[in-house]
Structures are given as C-alpha cells and as structure tokens.
Length: 175
Image (cartoon, rainbow, N blue to C red):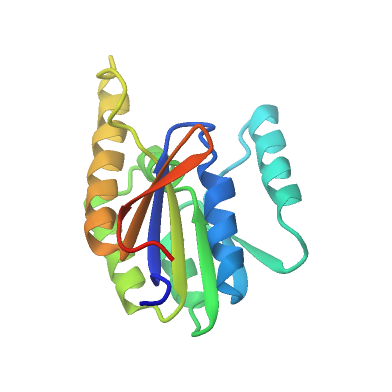
C-alpha cells in the first residue's frame, strides 16, 4: 500500500490544514522543501509568514514562489524529497493580480506535479462553502480556485479535508 506520493489538503481559513500538511510531510522522512506562495504586502501577512516559518525547524528549506510555482517544483524535484506547497489559493490570487491566465498556469502546474519524482503535499482553501462573491474579481478567484482544487483532487493520490483541526481522508487509503 504505502504512502500516497501526492496529497491535496483542503480546508477553510484557520482550519489547521497547514499544520496537518506539515505533519504529513514530516512523516515521510524525506528531505523537506517548503514552497511558499505568500507575499508580505502588509504587517498582518508578515506576521503570518513569520509564524509559519517558526513552526518549521531547521530541517526545512524554504523556497519562495509567489507566481512561479511550477518552476519551483521542477527546480526542487528529486527522489526522496518531499515538497510542501502552501498555499494554492494565494498562488491563484497572485496570478490574478499580475493578469496571468489561470488555465495555462494550472495546466503547467498539473504537468509539473505529474512529472515530479518527489512526494508533493499541496495546501489549498476550500472556497465552495461560502456565499457567491459580490464582485467580478472575487468571483474569478473563487471559480479559479475551485476549478484548480477539482483538477488537483482528481490528479492526486489522496485528498484530505481539514475542519477545526480534524482531518478526514476523502480520497486514497489511510496510511
């Protein structure tokens, strides 16, 4: 049976999905690479990024890839390595902010994941539980993130949903 090579971790904001994903990555025993998509545009985000960094020990190497996630996967790919990507919804936001087409970027991301020899754990917000956004940009974000999550869920070996710090394996076998 073994561990799944690719895991998508979904959940709401502050649900515990990053902590769960980190525990999954650390359980692999592989060399650890954290691929961060966040950008510190304000003090609150700088604090969040600092807290996330403090949660990881010196065994982690961090790569920042706010819009170049596919390239970061390819450049850090290696057998015996685990790539923790946190978070895809920030990546989608970053692409929208620089007017990059989500469809082509998503296709390339799925290709990079499929080609990789590393274990990959992806973190993303589940955006489909909320209300319909009241503006076009927010709807583009919600739709883009939702479609990306669906595509990744289909492609990944396992999918975990995290709610209130509790995880539920939605796809794939438990380890």
